[in-house]
Length: 595
Image 1 (cartoon, rainbow, N blue to C red):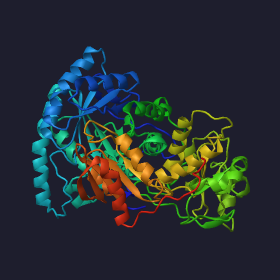
Image 2 (image 1 turned 45 degrees about the vertical axis):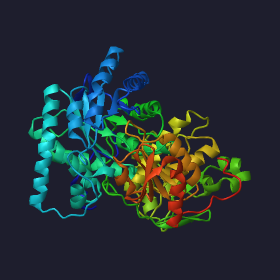
Image 3 (image 1 turned 135 degrees about the vertical axis):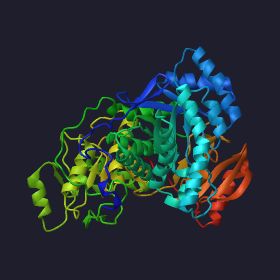
Image 4 (image 1 turned 180 degrees about the vertical axis):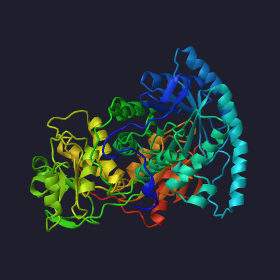
């Protein structure tokens, strides 16, 4: 089970209990404690444009956003928060405002005078990221921490005296060189980075803060938050600070919603998370209903009934796919190291049979009724005895119609079933007969199936919550892609727009998609500025990053290779760069998929 054997991030993997935290006040809005899960968003207007910022804040508040963030990249920008806050209050809106700070301690000190909360990123607040390789001795490391304490303490003291809240928000894409050299680009490094700042705050008797551990890869993000909560438990009962959840650079459309639902939804399902922000490369107003839908099921969710005491079959802090035997099902190898297969019902198969050739990458692979899958109640002792004593491996799933939550039901199945038996995951145990709201269906399916895939559980998936055949197949494959389980199309890491953005992100992302959407398995990052850009590039093959107004820098991995390209030429130059590195193929001719 690795070094993490003694760590626990939730009391019971099989029964829901929301993590208990202290209350942190952001103006008049409480986070954690007995409060509901708060929904946040971030405006995209230039912080110097008071009327535009005020209009966007009011629009978000009207849509149900409870806390609004505004970027403050320099002291000059931060100073205008005074005018924005005044006009927002004059309009009768009490929604708390948060200043988003990167790189500039003086901007943070200015912003704290005017807004209810300040977000600092330990990776770049008084620390640096130049991708330098350097071994720090313990003495040098302590010296650096002393320097950070000097830079950070004035902000802590100011927030304490003015009654401001703070978010200590680590981003996977912007860990400092110091952390990277000691801990690597890891969830452990993310946690240590945040805890260093929290210890400084606590030494000054300041406790009005929350943590976040964001990443664009849902697996990394889930592991980092789990590890943080386990580390807080280890530190002691008074380290019960609230948690802000978010997936950075989730992208747009269905992909952005699915990636957010996997990362945020799986943690909420384990009782972690007191405030959330869904980051979409769309107008901020579209983030709010998605966040509200994700939080909805957990706002009044009672604790689950105690489940049987079972030992987890996986390490929740380090991803590894459950090791099973390999079966042949309907001509497809399944389990072991094989791709996670996409199942459908006979009825849906019949509906698309005449156009399977046109379905491209969204083809159904196996009909569930013909698969020989064994469906059981994971509480049934006799069923497990029969399966675990059988001579051959069988494909197993949870029976439909049971009064069990999906994630605990499949975890219970995995914990009790011999590892040699592969598992078929389902998004719901109650198949839908009529179409409902597709976004709700998508969010539930992504939370349930995506969460289990990130736990390493699952060798095949079946979406039953969406009766439309084409939509259910597309959803199946998009969940596999977003969880990093089965890559079948270009993967995009695209940040949400904000006041730091140096080009039209939405338009540019769509343009890049249109040109590169056929490059299966290539990962392209589209970043509005350099805050997370270079770090998130490390996960991408190629990066398109705003360098200056109207100018683009292109990256290969985390290395910038082309600078100050005029925006009008940048997409073509990106294609040239992909070609240079042997990753380009021409788009196939023929009819597009009809899904």
